[in-house]
Image (cartoon, rainbow, N blue to C red; front, side, top):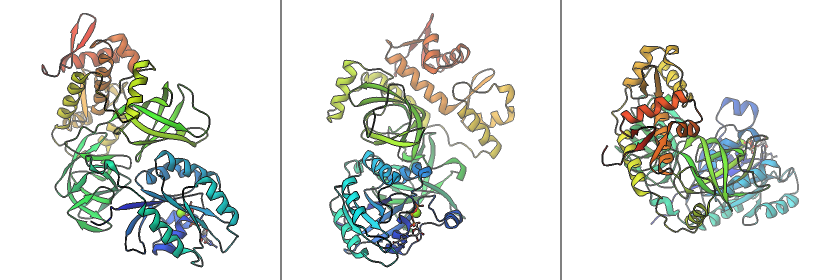
Length: 506
Ligand SMILES: Nc1nc2c(ncn2[C@@H]2O[C@H](COP(=O)(O)OP(=O)(O)OP(=O)(O)O)[C@@H](O)[C@H]2O)c(=O)[nH]1
Ligand SMILES: [Mg+2]
């Protein structure tokens, strides 16, 4: 059997020679954009392929080192198996050398090589010493992209590192790909690229684009510009999608097998580790998962356990890695692992702590209320079976964004064009909740999930005041939402309370 496909990602401070080194190793200049060439810095992720002495091939992702592009670095590093950290001999360890090391650790990427670069300009000794302190597990090799010195030793060190990597356990799961690039090819349509985290993707497959849930069919798959029948976990793939316009999919979206339970989450319970000061309960941070990111509040649950209350949905599964960044001044402060991808909203308690400790230890823990969970899953699956929406024009797409961004307080219909709203309704993106109120369907799906969670922690029922507080909205909107879900038969009104109906009756 041929060795599993591996992806190598660069890391390191700005100007420390990442791109020059990739070019020296592969002949490929990953700085393709005119702006990158004009400014002499990397801005976007770059891609190449490296053949090792044994003939084994690695996919390469070259990341930018500029402090303003750490989020791009995280998006690139999220799918890699091993790192190539560069430290310039004439500069030594600098802020983004450290920050990238924190990101790699948060992502659980423990195998890699350090290249001390620019050895034609300065003695590498001090930088080699710093490297062994920062990343003691990695071999460090002194190189020069300019003279070619050390490149053979670097290739050998990469070969040894690649040989140490165990296959990813999650590779057998459902198809999952975090989109890092989207482009169009004339005559073929929309193409997205990313590393296939798990499963397989092949021609003719039906996929969901999450979090919005649009369906797409795969017209073709390429791995490194070569068409393949099916791409396997670990490979960097380009997927040509049918029925999806360029503007309808973006970096941060997740392609997932259509028949799985993977779905967006606004709450995540995680085990986190921080490099410096521990954050405080209630701190607002930036959470990165795959190529997605969102601000979130941290709620402390005891020990290393935290609930992340997300402002935008992530698409996580248990065991996935998270990177936590401080918002101001921006810095990577830690990261960790998802323990429960769809928990209830809760604070610390002995029961919660026990459950999280068991999840952390790898015990299988049943969801708190299996019946409610099933009801939720079947509802979401029913939602996903909606008919294929028809393409929308740019003004309607802008309106759709407005409606989605408005969250639970959507603009009143008087401000919106009625024809456009009708188009959004026809396409299944907007839902009329009351005479004068439309909601984006993603927002409604989220509200629905939060109602189910609220009810499941509250004896199976919710009141107007509880929903208003949960959504931090006005009575008016909470009232309209409850009535909508009464009529949708998610809830049954009994006096002042709305009772969650069972999965079977609906
Ligand atoms: N003399 C010498 N110059 C080098 C070497 N490697 C890179 N450089 C120069 O250092 C500058 C920065 O190199 P890049 O490869 O663009 O650095 P980078 O780490 O990719 O920078 P960002 O992507 O912006 O973070 C360029 O002018 C390179 O020509 C080297 O080994 N020797
Ligand atoms: Mg670069």
